[in-house]
Image 1 (cartoon, rainbow, N blue to C red):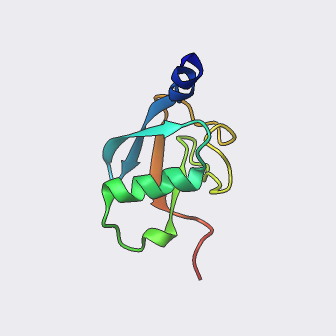
Image 2: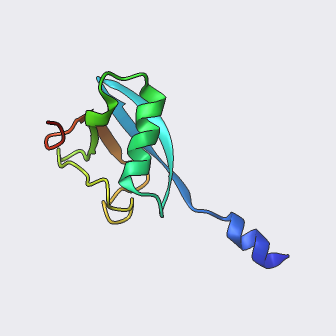
Length: 91
């Protein structure tokens, strides 16, 4: 029974995602990829024009790679992420 309890303690944490000056809270898990977070962000702000061109950026303005996990990208609780068109995607 105790082992089951431990599994439930998925470490979730909250960040703010900002799109066009509006910020919304998003709950993340450490094992998630940036792509999963991006998909969630697009959903909470949706419908967006050309969602396939969107990307997440950290406060320093660096685009976060979809392939990284939340931890690899350095995303921590209370971080502010920017949702905006990607600098590299597109035709």
